[in-house]
Amino acid sequence: MDKLHVRTGSSNQLIARNRFGLGARASDPQLEDPKGWLLDQLKGEPPSLTRQPPTDREVAAVYNAYMSAIRR
Image 1 (cartoon, helix red, strand yellow):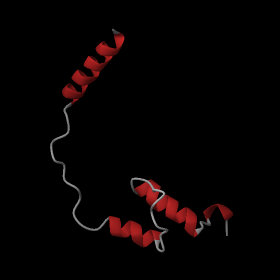
Image 2 (cartoon, helix red, strand yellow):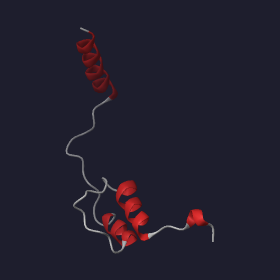
Image 3 (cartoon, one colour):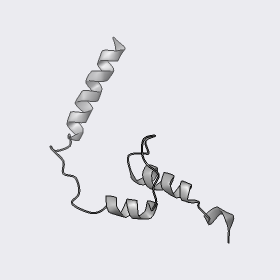
Image 4 (cartoon, one colour):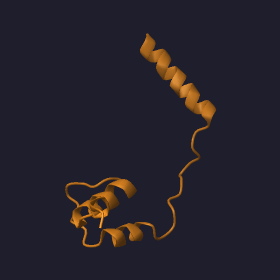
């Protein structure tokens, strides 16, 4: 078996938490089943947005105001 494709349990935990989540915290317990933990995260309803994201025009206005402020 190619050594590049072999993963340890520890690296599977890091991949599950950091690539697919918000990142591991020092206080997080060790995962017994990283794949199962990840699949559990995908169950249920997707999170809903509390408001609509800003439009391109709104983002540009905030950016331009910021750039003007730091140039002073």
